[in-house]
Image (cartoon, rainbow, N blue to C red):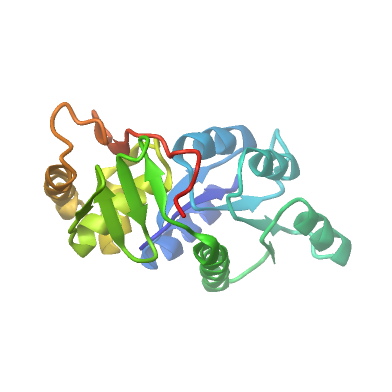
Length: 236
């Protein structure tokens, strides 16, 4: 499955270059030119990783990193023109998962993004347990790829399971059809966006999520979101 990367840099040319290379490798890319808009975009879109330039106008990149860390555990790859050991140590202490010094190779940055995501996702998978939602109404075990709805096992196709896993990864987060296509099929061609509607229809039927749907909610003009909250206690 692909990931969404937020690129934060005040140089439009550099952002465009990184977008080209990241999208070429299948990533969905969001852009911000300053710290404030980056924080707003991160809060609204919940990217899987942030590429953050420290030399930002207005709100410094260091403060952006601190606030991102305060809000959650999104992986951060820092960009900077400062190459000293002390600067690298400071960046890592701010919560960076990696630190890239300008000038750099875009291919190297994409490789570092991939490595950070692989590392962070791998550590999560090792401790991932089955999770229930909506007071036990929906139960999903991503390791075994098993789903239960209302206590009954549900047989899903690979695409249907990946779609549900994407939605449950961030309950309440509104996903665009384009993002969901990237998550379940590994590409984001517009021609395939509407196939998500078909998969959602089938998924709702199998989950007995009849209209008006309460598990998979349609977000008008955007896409879909999971409408049930994760239960406080994880299943054993």
